[in-house]
Structures are given as C-alpha cells and as structure tokens.
Length: 156
Image (tube, rainbow, N blue to C red; front, side):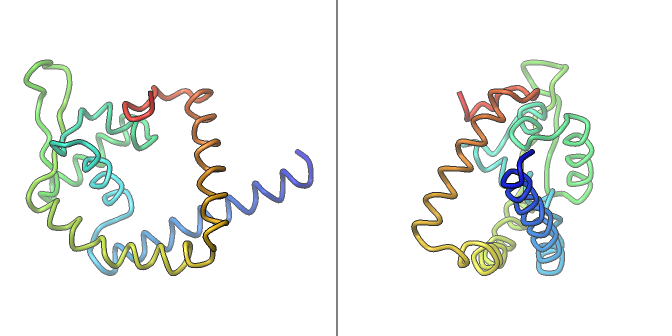
C-alpha cells in the first residue's frame, strides 16, 4: 500500500473500532442492549413486517449465518425476538421482533442517535457529510460486487 492508502486505512480502522466500542458501551449503559442487539433490531425494521429469514438477516448485517443464529438465540432468550420455522420452508427460520424488542429499540434509539451525532456527525459540515456518504456508498457497492456474502435484498 502507498503511504496515502495506509493513512486512509488506519484512519478508517481507528474510527470504526472506537466508534463501535463507544456505541456498544452507550447502548449497554443506557438500555441494556449490546451493539449487535441493536444492529439486529434495526435490520428487522427494514422489512415492513419486521420479519426476516435468518439467512437474509445475516446477509443484511454482513455476518456469517452461525453468528446471526447465535445472536438471535440470545435475543430470543431475553424476549426481544421470536424465531420460528418458516411456514413455507421447514428448513428456514423466520425471525421477528416481539413487542419487547420494539419497546427496547424505541427506548434505546434517542440516546444512541445523540451519541452518533455528538461523536461522529457533528465533526462534519454539510460538504463533508455529502462527500463521506458518496465515498462510503461507493466503497459499499465495491464490497457487495467483490465480496463473498450473498447480495442483500435491498441492494439489487
């Protein structure tokens, strides 16, 4: 890698690692949710019924299916999710948010959004935000095109 590439990569890694740490810490302290819990709940809201096949959930999150299954099981034990054998395919599992899951997500979101704004978004002006969004969308498209996970349903 060139010096510019190394600088950009290290900057990205430092930000994403520290940001995930801070978001996880805040969510646990304020709402007893982990960042993976929150990620799952938010992913489910992308579907009108808040229900997804576990394989689709794993793809949406960029996780291996086994990781998604373990996370769903832990959240199901805490009554945040319901997981059932799919009615149309006995080999598949449908995951949906429970009332408790919806309540937990609604309760956690305001303070989570405030944290994201204060430690990330507020460091950027409007031009920076547009440029960052363009860059991240371009990188995401490349990852989807060249990555090994199946293409997410929301990214044709």
